[in-house]
Length: 347
Image 1 (cartoon, one colour):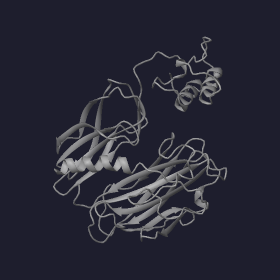
Image 2: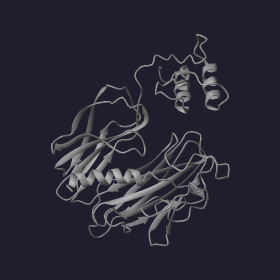
Image 3: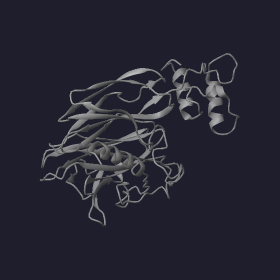
Image 4: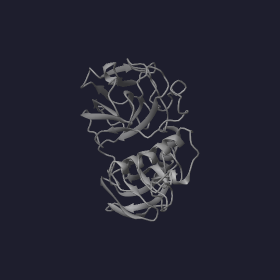
């Protein structure tokens, strides 16, 4: 199998296995071993209000860190968890050598009030929230900062596996949304890449031409991939782009979604690295909906109330409730209509 085919195979396999699920209602921190790293379990058998898959909600878990490590270097890591309306937060993170799945490096606490280190039964190290680190009552988002000291010898790429619990703060296992994330950092011999556009948060229309931009170092070629939604297998956009390439014209496909991503695979003679964009939306072909959900000729809060009643099952669906024209009626339609009513965005 070629290096490129092997890389794409691993990426596809990772998205089947690693868009996992972990929850932890324990305010003092979860038991070790629930990051959905290979060989680890999941906790959605407890936090199962929304099914057995993670990343089903409108929120997101993100890991932020440098793309490359030097041997023995200490690097900052930020864990960000967001979901509007939630009020208590938790996370767990581990670091494993990508090729061997052995623990890699060590965590350094920079905020011991909100984070702690625990050791799992297999010897894996985990950093996770403390009781104070649940930020009880804090609305919409939370973040934790820590550091990671790289190994003293080259172990190849290191993958961080993390899960987060965006809880409603009612003290029960119900009403909690579970998210997962993984991110890889590479040694000096490996290529790196960073997606610059899309930045995430944009809404594109089918057929719209956009230019994908990225930066990279030590890469000899690139592949571009499209992930229609969290957990979906990647669809190839381009393969074998030469080393000097840093942009590519892409025609947005007719795949309505709220959570699309683009990825750049950077290759060299040693290995490969994957860089992803943040999620963006693809709408449907213009459906001509005006936001007048109840058909009374006006756009007002009664239209928003009707969308909410439809979502609660208290009113029958109407095509006019598909405010964002993505072909389905979800909470995103209510949010989109609220943005219009508040004057934040035109319809």
